[in-house]
Every structure is written in structure tokens, then in C-alpha cells.
Amino acid sequence: MDTISYETLDKIGFDGYLQLRNAPEKVLQFGEGNFLRAFVDRYFDLASEKCGWTGKVVMVQPIDGAYAFADGINEQDCLYTVLMRGKQDGQTIDEARVVSSCSRCLNPYRHADYEAMMQVATSDDLEIIVSNTTEAGIAYDPACKATDEPPASFPAKLAQVLHARWAAGKPGVIVLACELIDHNGEELLRIMKQYVVDWGWEQAFVDWLEGDCTICTTLVDTIVPGRIRDAGEAAKVAERLGYEDPFLTVREPFQMWGIQGDEELAERLPFVKAGLPGVFVTPDVTPYKKRKVRILNGAHTGFVPGSWVAGFGIVRDCMHDETIRGFMDKMLANEVIPTLAADLDEQDCKRFAEAVGNRFDNPFIDHQLLSICLNSTAKWRARDLPTLKDYVAMTGELPRCLATSLATLISFYTQETEGREADGLHLRRAIDGASYVAQDDAFVLDFYEQHAADGDEALVREVLSCEQMWGEDLTEVAGLEKFVRDALAIVRADGAKAAFAAALA
Image 1 (spheres, helix red, strand yellow):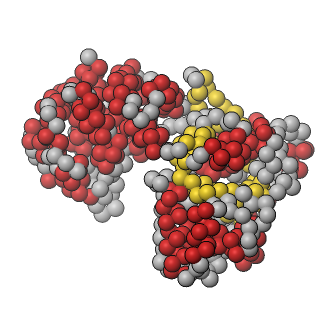
Image 2 (image 1 turned 90 degrees about the vertical axis):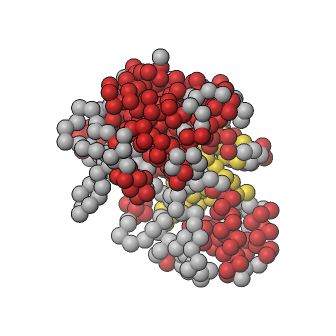
Image 3 (image 1 turned 45 degrees about the vertical axis):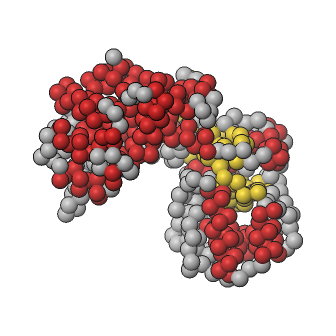
């Protein structure tokens, strides 16, 4: 079977949308991973189809070495398939789209490609720069030099690119940073300005960055599992499509891209102007980050450790269990969403929570509970503790589901799982190459080892009063210590599901 290319698509009589092949290159993209291709480049592709925007994306490979992504995707004309799979509005979705928004991929560690990148940077066509270089990508590296071809760090690369554009007398561009850190655009600008100081560049360039360029903070949210790992399933998909595609990527239907800016920015972004679902411009993305963390991430951390203790293995199975699904739904509806009303529309939060349920019930993704349980202590502190405190301040009462989730979290580190033989305590450490189940910060694992012989009353007191874990003494929250102790007793006697059920009573 032939690999996807314009020639192959013509041969099989492909009748889907294909963007004009020789459209001007309007986007420079740092990163070419599954997320950017399935999310950002798909948005550009849809904008071209829906509102007639004509522009291509030039991808830039972020690392050198044996990594040969650029060569591979260029061989197939930078065409690839996005398979959207999951649930939306209660319906199962399984749709394929050929994305034709990309023109080429450059490896800037090759001199010719580095020169090509700088030519794109100074072209009259360039309008937008996009990045997703992982959470570690927006970081300052003092070793980077202005003369490096290219510099190692992404902010240094971008500073070099934009300085060349400024020196050429070209207009500013929109920069959309998609890295998963708070205030990503602001942090990117801050680091670039540090390089200006390091490299002795002109203040006029800084003025151009701040006045002519629009460097946006953004918030992205979608799950992109990537390639199909099962060979049999991959073969079936290829047969269905009529071609092989080594760069096919799978994503879920849910999508959200919040971009911090004004109405003028919204008019300049083709995928916003086209009214595509899930993308919007807002004066402040912070409330939407709060919504995501407290509803989506908070739900995960709220039910997953206890569900593992109860013998479950993947998220989808939890959504088919009446008790666990009921526990999550009640936690979100009665405890989490009411605390968000000051910053966000309540109905919007309810719709988001409903979408979360669909996402967790994705029939195509086997999301392992243990992978979610990584560093659960810090996650509970960041995602669930703020809601618990806000609920107490708002109502004067304890949120039963959130408090129960703390008890099941403690049980995750100190109790054998139900229905699993020879699993032992979750606290198994990585000693002499042996693996362990509970993976967390060293001080958390050390803490539970030190208190392994404690009775539950003493254990709960020690956990809640550990300020290193929570940043404060949680025994000072009225009634919390007793509630957690009682809920943990239910877990010990009757199992984690019984504790979830008690919270529903």
C-alpha cells in the first residue's frame, strides 16, 4: 500500500479537502509533535476550508541528532492524517481528516535548513509564530549565544528569528505560545528580553517586540494519544483510508484554545474569525485555567487513587461504575462548580464538566489509573485542596466528596489493593532496579515509610499536619481530621468504593 502523498491521494480518488499546495507560508511553527499537528495545524487547515484563509505552516524540528522527523514527513509532502476518536454529546466519534496546512519541515541544525528558517522569518508573508516545545521549552539557558546556528533553547531561537525580522524592517507578528506553563507568553517575552541584555542588542528591538509584536499567553486543552500502537488496528485503519501514514496521529474530539488578547487580535486569527469550535480570544485566560485545573484535573485526582485501591485499572471502567461515576459527578456539581461561580459562568462550568465525563469515557483510550497517580500528593494540593478551602469558606461546611478523596489518597499509599494478589503496599520503592507502584516525591515516600507502623488515628493526624505536603496544617480545618479518619476507617473495613458510596449518602 502506498504512503500518503499528493500523488497517492490523486491515485485513490481522494475527495476530501486539500489546501492550495503552493499557498504562501504565513506560519512558522517551533515544534512538530503530535499535539501541534493534531490541534494547531488542524485548526489552520479548518480555517482555510471554512473562511478561505490561505496560508501554510513551516514546521521547525526542535532537536538534532538521529531524530529524522523532518525527512520523513517531507517525503510525504507534509500531508498526514488526524484521527478524531472519542465521545461527543454522548455519541461515539471516529473521523479521519487529511491535514494539508503544512508546507515543509526544517531541521535548523543543518545549515541549509537554518538559512531557510531565517528566510521565512524575514519574509513578507509571515504573520504568525506558534510553539509547543514542552513545559521545559520556555527556559533560560545562559550558554546560548547570538551567533549560534541555532541556539539550543527555544526562547533564544525565537529571539534570533525575531531580531532578524526586525533588522529587515518587517512588521511584527503574532506569537502563540502553547507550552503548558502559567503565563507562557509573558514568560517567553521575559526570557527573550534577557537575551537582548546578554547579547548587547538594541533597545529599539525591545520596543518593536513590545509594540509591534503580539506575544500571547494561551491555554490549550485536548488529549492527543498519538500513533496507533496496536499493529492490527493500525492495519485496519490504513485499509479504511486507502494509504499508509507513518505520521498519523489520534486525538479526542474535545478541544479548547483560549488566547489572551483583544477583539482586534480575534479578527487577525483565521481560526477564531472562522468561528471554529473551542477556540476563543479573551482578556484573561486565568479563569479558564482555574476551570480546567479544578474540574478536569481535580476530578482525576479526586477519584483515581481510590479507584485504583478499589481494583480498577483504567479511567473508562470507572465511568461505567455507578458508584464512582456518581461520586465524581456529585463532587463536581455540588462542591467544585459552586466555588467557581465568582469567576466563571455556572452553566459554562456545567457544560465543561459534562464534556469531562465524555472525555473520561473515551472508548478508544485506555487511560491507566497508575499513570494518573504519579505525584498524587502534589496534584491533590494544587487541584483539590483550593476547592476544599473555598467550599469551607463559602458554606462553613466540609465538602464530603473532596474530604473523602483525601482519605482514599492516604489509603493509596498505605493499603493493599482489593482483588490484586501479591501487589503489596503501594509504597514499594525503586531499590536495586526493582520498580514500585506509588511514584511520588522522595519526601512523600519517606514520610509514609516512617509512619508505616502508625495506627490510622495517628497516621491521619501526621498526614494532615505535614506542612511540607500541603503548605499548611490541615488539622486546623474544622472537622476535617475526624472526617478523614472516619472515611479511612470505611476504606479499611469495607473498601474504597464503600467510602465513595458513603459520601453519596
